Each structure stands twice: as structure tokens, then as C-alpha cells.
Amino acid sequence: MIRLDMSEFQSPNSSERILGTPEMVADEGLLTSQVRKQPFTVILLDEIEKSNPNIWNLFLQVFDDGRLTDAHGNTADFRHSIIIMTTNLGATIYSDSGIGFNPSASAFSTTAVKQAIDKTFPKELINRIDRVVLFHPLSRNTMRQILQNELNGILQRRGLRTKEWAVEWDDTATEFLLNTGFTVDLGARPLKRAIERYLLSPLAATIVNHQVPKGDQFLFIRSDGKRINVEFVDPDTPEPGHLPPADGAGREYTAAEDDLRALLLFQRGNLAEVEALRSAHDKLRAQIDGEHWREKKHDALEKTNTADFWESEKRFSILGDIEYMDRIETGLDTAGSILQRLNGPNNKNRTVFAPNLIRRLAQRLYLLQLAHLSFVQELPRDAYLKIEVISKSKRNAEATMKYALTMKEMYLKWAKARRMRFSELLSSGADAGSGNSCRSILAVSGFGAYLILSPESGLHVFELPKAEKTFERHNVRVSVVAQLEIPPLGSETLLTQAEERFRTEEGGTPRIVRYYRSEPSPLVRDTYRKWRTGRIDLVLDGNFDLFGPVLASGS
Image (cartoon, rainbow, N blue to C red; front, side, top):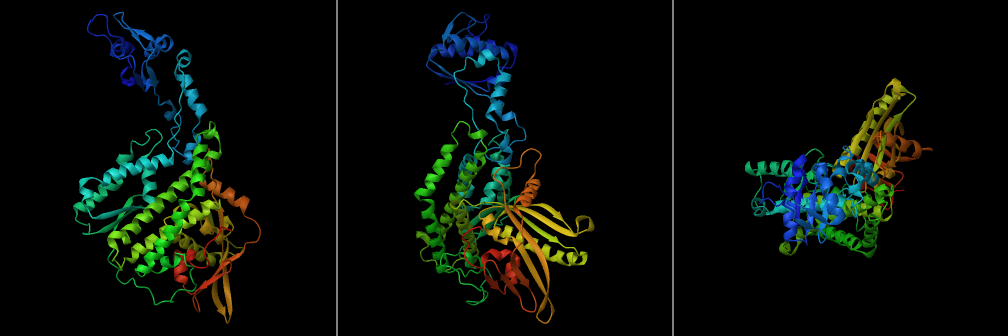
């Protein structure tokens, strides 16, 4: 193969390097001499658009007659060669666009790329090209594979390979590196810099400062959206003061056999809990490895090869399905890896485990179960959540405001605990200009986000004792709608899209979801899912989804 970097041929006299110069007998020409020596070759003209137009005209003869005469009158035969030209014209059309199925990738258009080629190169050159092959933006699946290859290589470095560490990646860390390490104009090139900056440098500083514990350790790598955090967990060391109350204390419902939510509330770090986690993992693995799952993913991948795929609005849904399935599979692989290291063949005699590890693994499998359920039932995945206080009485609105803030804090704690990605799109307080209203709108995405939040739509009533057997009630309205698969376009923002969704989806008299009471005795009553508990502290701390019957649908 002969490769020419066409950025080196930008001057008007660059053709002399290809054809040679008449004044110098020894100078036979860079390209013509090689083709005469080996006519059966592949010629790569890399980034052809950066070369001088005189070079383009030079290749008109090659593409038409299959031959080229150098400065000394010698003819090179190109009829047995394959010539490939590359160009980055398509990558510079949309400077603000993203890659893969990201929201900003909606600007990608094959038509626009072809128009850019037609405007740049003369028609006689394009007319001599047998075929134009258009490369589409990198898919999220491809980016994740590239990232995984980079991480595997990094973890094999001598300084890390010799450590007794089991490194486990949280989905938030992977997404963070994908978002910071890829750009539309540079592709995957900044990825190594992102890994070096956000992962290796902080980890190296920790090692140098001798802040790394010795012995067998689990390294949990996650992100809070701003940076990557590394946490060391010793699998053999129970957390001090962690033992839960005696059996039955604080448990107001009986969990189903495969319900992992009890382990998210209370963990003892015993072998029975690990066996329950392994059973849940194996059941989900059987479903992921099943024929139905494989066929669904294969069909989605096949659709990406259709001619009009990148111009179709269905691409958001199809690429979203592929990405979601990839994330579920990766998350399940990580859960299986933790289980293997926690209680695998090399640790058969272990009977005591760190409750922190049990909790982490229970949450991962719990959310994976919900993600799988959402997918197979074709339910929405991500959600917009609105918390609202509307009152005709300014005094009552001000009194209810603190309960609205309590609700907002509850959902924020829940989102952080469940590793959800969330952003506050709107936050407004009560004032006369807003009609004594208080509104907060959140965008929440992650495994099981909509499935967990959708039953929260309705009135949440906070009760204060007023007189004997009577209560003063303050109503906070919560609304949940699904996020659209089509990202905001043009001047539209997530907030305008969310408000439009609420306008079209809200309606009718809201149902009462839950009652909250701190006095005279703590009590939370969920009238929709039919459960009650005296642990109002656990509910308001973001654990509302861990009570009641097993979630089976989003309705």
C-alpha cells in the first residue's frame, strides 16, 4: 500500500513531488516510481481536500485513462491499482453537533455531506470516482468498545497490574468519560487525554500520597458528573456500627423472594445475602442470554444499515434501544464480576462480607431488573418530574412551601442514591407575580427512572395535628411524564420540551399518592401502591421506592 498525506501537497508546485522534476534525472517522482515498481497496489490519498487543486487536476488523467506520465516521460500504469481518497469534509459541517445518537447528532445529514463534497471538488473529478462511501458518526456502542479497550490497556500497566485490586466501573464513570473524551470534530482522539486527566492523575496522586489501603480491595470508580471518584472497599471488613435493628424492626412489608429492595434498606453481610444476589443475577442473565433478547438486538442493528436510516426520526428510538441494551449487558457483566470475586472459587470459605458491597451489588441488580422490565414491556425510560404548589391563599402557599422543598429534597436524594443523572430545569418560589405558586422541574434519566417515578404522579399530603383526631393538610402536587426519544431541536430546550409534555399529558383530578405524618406518631401511607410504614425518615431520605409491592409496570 502506498499512502500519501495530502496535507503535504498544498503548494501550487506540489505536483513535482509526485511526477519528479525534469532538471534532476534521479528524481523520478514519489508516486509514479513506486507504481512502476509495483503496479498491483492500493494507493491511499489521505485527506485529499487539503491538497492543492492542481493535484486534483493531476489525478483526472489517472482516474480516466489509468496512467500518469512523470517529468521524464516515463508512464506509470495505474490500471491494476485501487485508489482510495479520504476527506473530513463531513466532520466540519456542524460545529455544534454531537456524535452517535446524542441529542446534537440530530443535525447529521448524508445529503448535507454530499453537498459539501460537490461544492469542494470539481464535477469532472467527482464524475470519475466509482463510489463515494459515507462514514456515519460513531455510535455509542462503538465508543464504549473503544473506551473499554483503552481502560483494559491502562489496567495492564505495571504499576496497576501488580496491585491486588478488583476494579469495577460504575455506569456513571463510563458515561462521564464518553461525554468528555469524544467530540464531533476530533472523534475519539481526546479519549486518552480524558482518561489521563480525570482518572489516572487523581489515582496516581492517591498512590503517591500513600492513601491506598493494602491487601485485597475493590475499587469502585464512579462519577458525580463533574469528576471521577475512586472508592476503596475491603471485602472482609464490616462497616463499624452498621448492624441493622433486630429482625422485623423497620420492616413493614414482606419482600418477595427475588425482591432485592430489602437488601438496599438493611444488610448484614452474610452468606445468605450473597446467595440471594447470585440467584437474582442468574435469573436476569438467563433472560439477557435468551433468544428473544438476541433477536431484538440483532433486528435493531440491522435497521442501522438501511439507506435512509440517518434521515429517519426512528433513528433516535433504534439507536436508543441499542445503547440501552448495551448498558444493561455491561452492567450485568460487572455485577457478575463482583459476585465472582466476592464468593467465587477462590473465596468459597468466606462467610462474612462488607455490607457496603452487598448494598452496592443489590442496587445494581435491582436497577438492572427494572431496566430490563422497562425494555421488554416497551415502557418509557427517562422522565420529567414536576413538584408544584398552587394555592389561592398566600399564607397557605407559604406554609406548604417547606413541604414542597421537602419533596424536592427527597427526589434529589433518591436520584443521587440510585446513581441517576438529573438536572434541575426550573426552580421558582412563591410570590404574588407567580400566583402564589412554587414549581420545580427535574429531568431524570437512568435505569428504571420512569418506571419508579411514574406512580409518584398525584397529590402528596402532609398532615399536621390540629385538634383531637383532626389534621391540617398541605398538598404538594407531583407530576411525572416521559421524556421524548427525539431530543430538543433548534431553539427548543429541555425545559420547553418538558413544559410542553406537561401541558399535553396532565389533566383531570390528581389522585392522592401518599400521606405523610410526623406527629403524634410517624406514619407514611401510600394509597396507590397500598403500603404503610412508620419509617418516615427512610422514605424522605430517598427510599420511597423500596417499600410496597414489587414494581411490575409503570401504570
